[in-house]
Length: 120
Length: 113
Image (cartoon, rainbow over all chains, first blue to last red; front, side):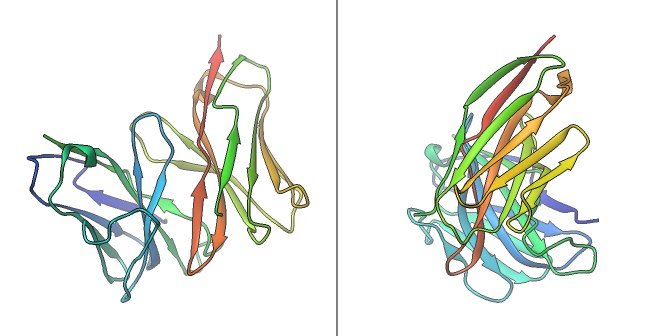
């Protein structure tokens, strides 16, 4: 149980275009989803936290108009990188926490496999 | 602020020896401390976690200790094996407008044969 998927696993796009990344919880209801960005040889940096049906909470320094997050259902959250530029190239990872009998706690996060974005 | 510091950044140990990674956190209200192992290009995998009402937790060759007073927690890997080579991240929960996990900077562990 507690499987999180992401799509696509990798994407290459031209500078100025927008890219949408999907994060799905496959076998549980994700009350909260998190989006992280990881540059090579660096740690995971939290970008934003989203709860189903409400606006995402962005971390300081993360542009909410550039990184649009939608958490419309308990199994799906999307991250749209608008007007992507080469400096947005990174590994984007989502995670989710749930509230089902199978979860040890609501703090435990389960990660998706990540999406590698390359902006040319 | 919300901060998790992790040391060392790199660690090389002889196969069979023990490895210790240390972290400190900034908020005394933090009460959940997971440790993740990440292999190149893959997602972080939870290897062990500890809550603030427990001082130590062990799972086979892996153990974590927590000192709430010092806001310090450590990962101990005994009898290291080549497959333990990876990047390890500590993390801690912070509760502001929402519950979230902040990661340490990571430790690249290499096991020498």
